[in-house]
Length: 185
Ligand SMILES: [Ca+2]
Image (cartoon, rainbow, N blue to C red; front, side, top):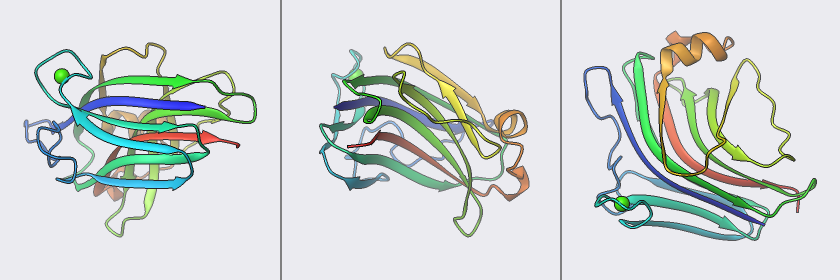
């Protein structure tokens, strides 16, 4: 069982303001980012310049050989849903069975001012056993190429097209996270 996620992320709004603290991982992960783990397995959070062969830093969130969850996330106040999210990510998974399957995600959570989670979008890389299904508060964007790629998300469009049960007017905070998880044991 192996879940491996490499990602670099940057969040900007339409007028170019970067909402994330240390969104480019050029500082230590403790600056701006929160590690959240559960279950068991070997969980690794790291940053390095070499994950993607460019001069800049990337962050690594890895969960290996376990039935757990590892998340590297950050929640920020947003001025509203008129936001454009842009990031580069590399996904990896290994092994898995019908009762224990890995998923590597970049997750975008939509929260209200009281930190209630209204809905979520997940860019997810998975195998054939993953049984996640979308709903009015849960949008899934299938990643088929695990190599480094650029990803874009227009939050207002995403809410109106894929998350009909989330009121865009209630979204006042957004969580961006690297998330590895497995199901089963
Ligand atoms: Ca690099």
